Every structure is written in C-alpha cells, then in structure tokens.
Amino acid sequence: QSRSSSRVLKDTMSTSRDRFAVIGPRTLPGDEGNLPAAPRAVAASIPRRNRPLLRIFIAFVVGLVAAAVVYQVCSSLPVTYESSASLRVRAPGGTGSSDNVLAANELASQYAQYVKSAGVVNPAAERAGVAPGVLRDAVTAGTAGDRNVVTIRVSADTPEASRTQANAVSAAFIRFVRRVEEGDRRAVIAQIDEQLEPIEDDIAR
Image 1 (cartoon, rainbow, N blue to C red):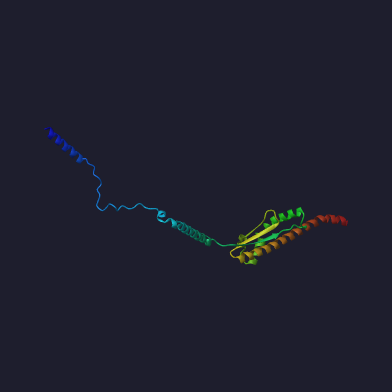
Image 2: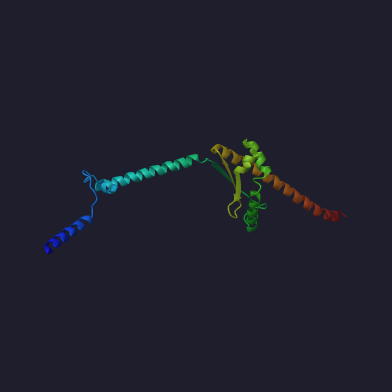
C-alpha cells in the first residue's frame, strides 16, 4: 500500500506541474531572422574621407538659399534715389567775427524751415514738372549741428528726377531767401527813416 500510495503521489505531482507549466510565446516558422535591423545614423554610413565634402556641400546649399531669399526681398523693395545740395548762409555785415558767425548759424536754422514752404515748393515743382504735394513729400532740409550750411535733399524714382528736383528746389530757395532779405532790408530802412524823421524836422527848423 505504501508503494502504491507513493506512486499515486508522484503521478499527482507530475500532473500538477504539467497543469501549471508556463507556456512560452508561440513562434511561427520563418519569423526568425526577419526582424528589421536597428537604424544606423546617416553620418555613420558615410565614409570619413567624404564627410568634409558633405559639410562643404551643405554650406553651399545653405548659402545659395540665403542668397535667393535676400535677392527676393531686395527685388520686392522700391528703389529710390536721392540728390542733395548744400548752401552756405552769410550774415549781413561781412564775415570773420564771432558775432557774424553766430548770426549766420542762426539764419541758416531759420532759412532751413523755408524749404518746404509754398514760396519755395510751388515754383520748384512747376520748374521740375511735378505736383507740389509730391515734391513737398520728397524734400527734406536741415543744418548740420550749429553750422551755417543748409542741406536740401530730394528723393525720386530715378537719378535724373532727383537731381532735377534738387536743383529746382535750391534755385527757388535762393530766390525766396533773397526776396525775404530784400523785404527785411526795406522794412529796416523804413523803420530807420521813421525814427530819423523827427530829427530831420528839428534840423530843418
């Protein structure tokens, strides 16, 4: 009975082991050896002696693309040309003294404000053959620091137009300033005559 019992126990243990055995994943025939290989880096697949050439090629392509972008941007921008004229202003009474220099600098600052006035722009526009509003928008004027030089700049679509308009504005500006100076001189003379009139009457009496 003991032998039979031990045999039965062994059979039971073997059956329980078979019942709870771990079943591995099923492998289909032909699957082995067909797994994709690990990806390799592109640089690693290129021979070392060809890598400097690759860098040069990449730099060339990048430079070519950048040049194309810059050309596209520059070609889309409007092209303008600018001409300038510089005019020196002198104060009445000669030059050389510090007072005359300061007076000339102050006159230059005042005269620069006349450049875009109707008395300058309208005759200049008629002479250059453009509309006064267009010429007024294209003209800028100013002085460099405290110097007695008025600089006039005119922008246009062509070099010839900018040069013609700058010359027309400069000529109109000079004529306008001369008229202003002549008017101021007459006003000063009239004021002096008015002040001298009582004195002359006293002398006559």
